[in-house]
Length: 100
Image 1: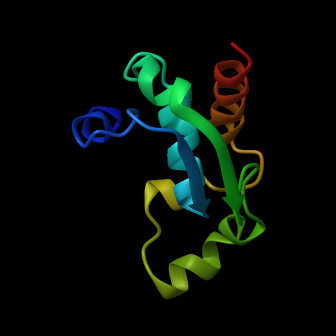
Image 2: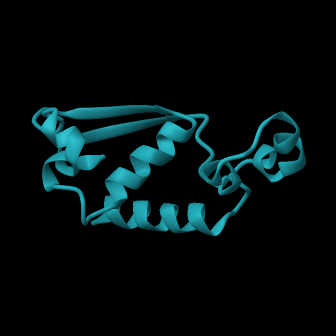
């Protein structure tokens, strides 16, 4: 994803990310993934607006019986349970990347 953003010219001007729901987790993952990210995107990031982002998971995702009744939940949905190891790890990586 970071390579596609760079190919599109993202990082050449100041960036303010405006994210909603799962999009916020995707942006956090992009910014926290130092291996795939050039300094252009990170240094061009001036701010991030998180709207309804399940940083620590969602009670709704914990109710898998509800989801199974509506549709087959994806792996991503199942990882949105409250305090899931995936989200805790993402939060730690993201916090480290913005402190450095």
